Length: 581
Image 1 (tube, rainbow, N blue to C red):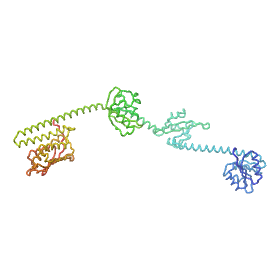
Image 2 (tube, rainbow, N blue to C red):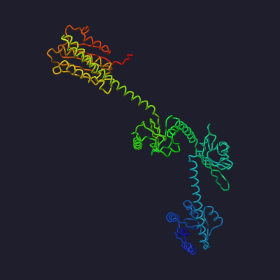
Image 3 (cartoon, rainbow, N blue to C red):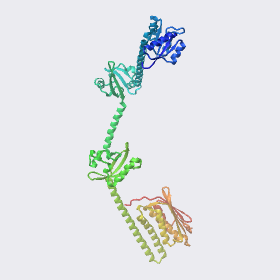
């Protein structure tokens, strides 16, 4: 009793109270005390002083020890000793049953210190026992709560497998109720070899329970516990049925992906963030000339890239780490093998988790060789076509020159005019071949450039360039040679007629328009001259020029519309090339 003891003395005789205090001091008890002589002062002392022990007389004028004992037991659990002059043995036994700790006669106060010490020691020991019990109960409550609330199945079994207790998770795992499980043997649910592993060999691990059509798997941790000489088995499990099923599926898929990886028909590899090759398939190993052990984890992709492509591939890699969407998913790359063999490959790159990438390489070496041969052949054919256009243009120019020379030898103006008209027609055709020869595209010509040049040549030929204005409004249209030649001859005929007959005083304007119209084209040739002759029937033309125009319109599957005073509208579609042999 290291601390000072608080003693509450219930006594109405002051001399008796002093004797009690003196005996306690003589007994070596360090204490503080308060004396009460009625119920009110007693209750107040209990509330305010909070004593460690009560020493009470049996009988007081207005109060008694029995009532005081009841009050104390209602509020507190402290020692209560009767100190009285007279007390019968039967009464003493009754009070001890009612909760009194001890009794001492006033005639024998020398025993009081010993009784107080004993009562205080017993109270302290009892408090310790109660605290231990409370702690044990609290611990049991906590562990029971953990047992009940645990999401993992828990089984408590005897050494023969009899189930003593299960938590709700275990009951749910077995798809049964607690009362239907306890008392039964775990053999009813566990395969025999797993049961022996647990209860004979004491091994933990994966255990298959016969629950459901496909069974359920529990990863069990087994602990043997000695409980008061009786051994029990504590089984803590984790339901891994779904996990194992997923693992099996993943393993199956992994095998499928491995087969696909090996048999894609292309060189396939996986690179890390540092471009080190982590995995290659057999096709890449075969091309490279290295074994997988020499490649995987040892070499980089750039070790196989041709020096001319290495800088580009390194730039792709750096950009991929910073902005994956910025690099092309497909690109061409040239690779070299250990043997010095080179090949062109079409690469498809897919980003994988962890800054890795999968690259599939399709060998396009033969395709590139064929493409190069085709390009070379096309260049040769293009040169040949240009040469043909050039020679045709030269031959037509020779014919044009011969017509001009022939015209100069005749004195007949009508005949000279016919020579000149034929010369213009030849020049219109020659101009097309000249444009094709000069154009980057030898299969079609720009209609606007062609018409401007053609009309300019006609104005110069008829000597009206300064007095007759040519207004050309042509959209950016390209026509093949099958369509361009008839269009050029039509324009030649109609503009030539305007220049010859429409402007008696030598001044005026010729208009040529061409634009797209749906799937075809619309071309207009007009002038602001004297107009068409009154006796000219557009439906029954007899002049050579208009007959030529009508025939040319038919060649391009077109329609001719003539309006007065002098307007010719041709609607047509582009003529497709037809093989002539």
